[in-house]
Length: 363
Image (cartoon, rainbow, N blue to C red; front, side):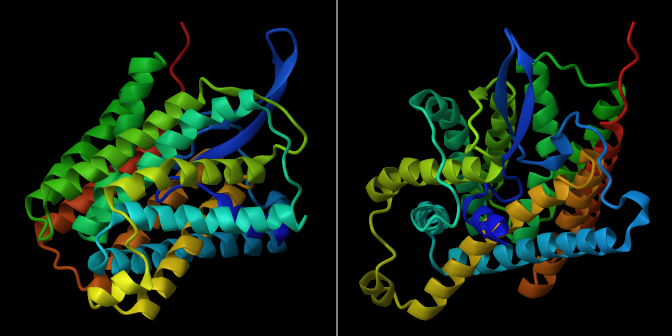
């Protein structure tokens, strides 16, 4: 449990959190490295060998994997519900995002100072390599909260399902990874479905729409950056500590911006002056912050047990679960055309996750 507990405090973003994986091997003279690979959306996770969760049909492993998937979805549901409740009445997305990072930073520092988890030894060069990832990670989570504060949870997640499109586009532009014809065909319903869902979305406004699109762009930019960054390996710099460093960096990057733009708006004096319930705001913010980090850590635990394709299919199902539960909880009005557009998007994401495994024939 200590590993999970620390991971809960330090994982990355909604809908799509960075995943850090070790790649050991000779690179230019035999030096070993730790690769920082973006996880923002598992559908875009490329490569990797199939690692199915229950070799030999072991019942215990199957039950464990099923429990992890259940926790993954449950933490996502609670995060989106509590976070939306806060953002509906407390419309300061910078402050809300900073609260998420501050919860993680506090718990990480507590674990390190009490030796519940070994503090990493990290060089200035390593910090410089991680900084760009922390920056886009911060921006991606901020844009997501800006969207959630403006439009319905279901609509934000429908737009965020368009991340595979940005992944393919940026990979083609900056990594020269030309998508296969099957990938291109699977992206068409994703783009068309978002347009269809937007036509009749009751909560639609341009600020919420473009914030979600900006979140897609920043998270997929992180994936591109991560493929170009290598950090020298240290024994203490494992996945959990890398998450911890990203979280702390994000806190310090966002804190001065928040103070300058929004000021200090989370004090009891201010909340009472605008007629907000202190207990509700603080409790819901705490639960949202904990679930924010918990669902991403559980996602990494699942990815360690299954193939990337299986994980991406699970992520597609997760979006369905989050959209449906948010519609039911908030009683979001959904027109037939809106429902059709959302279904087309999710169907396209599912197809994308399947065709990504099709390798182009070598000449």
